[in-house]
Length: 262
Image (tube, rainbow, N blue to C red; front, side):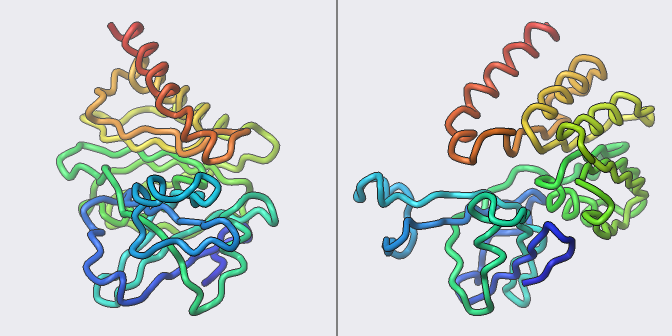
């Protein structure tokens, strides 16, 4: 466990259970950390469908999704970054309390995005929640590939080194007291797009992601298939609340987009 920045806990998970884990195809691979209710010993191996079928609701675990920042297949080690803001939330305080040898339960991985090596240039935009996937993506860029990277964090102390074999232009935006994503929307709106076909990755708080989706799809005419975009979280909601409404949210956004583009 480490602390790359004041509000980030870096976990390195290992153990024989990780052997053969299907990680590597995507740069936004994610796992879902599993938090059982106090006093509940979940059956192993973990099977969420079976748990929901066989156990009463009060014994169901809570889940939190986190991107795999790095995967070392030879060592059998997986790195996961967790944002920590003191005693607020579920996963942050838990991650800060972990010690070597503690058990970590998770399911996954999932994933869907990796930089398209045939794209003329790449656009990667996100807040702290998207930073692990952005870091993994820029490391996978082809040699010399043009990439514009915009990352919003609280302040300078939350910046961290990102390295890439590509021709990367990295801009850190400091949020300060502004709403999450406001600086990102302004930066993308003002950006002079390089020529050619873009492959874009835009993730983070749902409100600014919705704004950027409209900007990219409608104003900049980025094709849907060239855009990986999703709200990882939503201000004012915990993870369960956001997941329960995310499908309806996405359908509404897609309907508005179709009406405008169509």
